[in-house]
Image (cartoon, rainbow, N blue to C red; front, side):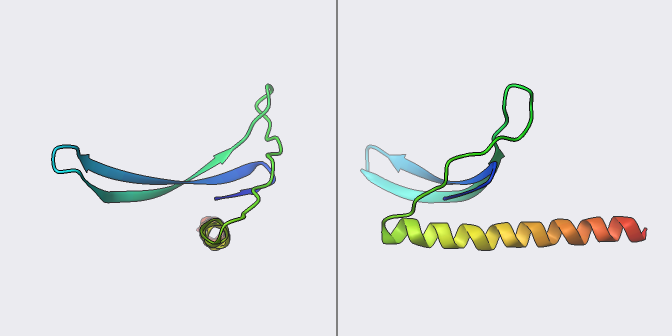
Amino acid sequence: NRAWGSSMEVGVKIVAENADARNVRHTSTAYLTFVAIDARGKPRRVPAVVAKSADEKRRFAKAEGRRARRLRLRRERLLRRKRA
């Protein structure tokens, strides 16, 4: 969906297919975040994602919102730990 520096978000859509009935149904969706690392285990840059289609542009924009939320929640957890 999107890449930032050394991290990337990958969207996964899981479907169940009944081959006999010839139907497919969506069962779940997940957004996975990965960090690219080099041979020494250090973060390394990843290529940018270039959104072209309307669907790619929508997923690209939504990914930024999810990332902003993750970072905000992370900062809040760190602040709570410091206060405790």
